[in-house]
Image (cartoon, rainbow, N blue to C red; front, side):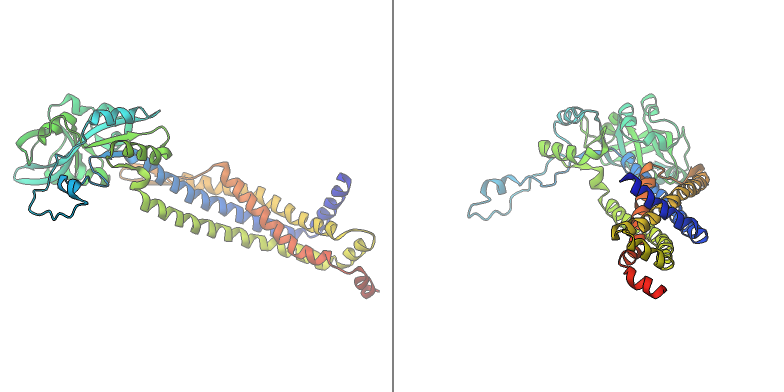
Length: 416
């Protein structure tokens, strides 16, 4: 069996070696298709992975807030909801905002293997300097814990998050906000809230310009400083949780929300719109790069089809001496696979070179040198090879059907 297969493969190789120009064109087509497939997919998948990584790292994987997805009913409605009673004129019950028994929620979040939870308090204040007012949202945090669950420290232009602990009344604001107020690190501004007449705050750090989630109107202070400034001692209204496995965020968030009732948003839920767009983007990307490989497969089809047309007499002789239809199909399909194999190998080299060129490009962004994120994983090489072999096999099989159905009597009679 092995000897017969080797004999058939040898025939396929002789066919290709005698049509070197067409063989070279077909191989070049496959190589270019594979090379650009690798370059495009590496660019698209790499940028997508980088975007998802930024979504994951930009904020805690889970944010537990003092909101309720289904607010509890008012006492009157709860007692007489099913009765034939018309309630009117009663005072709606209001509750103080904040997470009740937040220590238990924090302990439950920390109990998840590999999880780190950080409590915080947010609220609105007004910064004032020389008659200029800027309304911002402050976030009171524990710096040592916060640096472990978010990438805030990486977004700082000057200063460190831990400077909040060493400076009385320290605050970190965005570079844009500092420019509007006309302050620099070390300057003092007045901060007022709805429950505070005002106090002095010292700028200890600045967020980089362009960090929209941070610099547009957010300031970071020490947790106890925020509780004092907002008049909410011992209260927190947000718990951020970072997990060892970010993709388990939905499951853990649902479990915590079911247990405590407070809204727990995973990063997937917060970024659902962006993630749905990425699915559409992937469909478009793979459709385009698959079209590239499909066009490359036409070269294989042309070579095998011409070989079938030129070898009609040889095919008739082979059929007359006992070669089956399967043997003939095998020969021409092997021709297509050999062309695909050689093309894939050269395409891998071309794709590697294109990715090296793309990866070496430098782009100055916000004063930093950035490079294009690329996905160089073996998975992309495997997908390109599998798609090329599949396309090559189909492109060779179509004309091989014609060869296998040749009637040797008609061909030999016409040749006489």
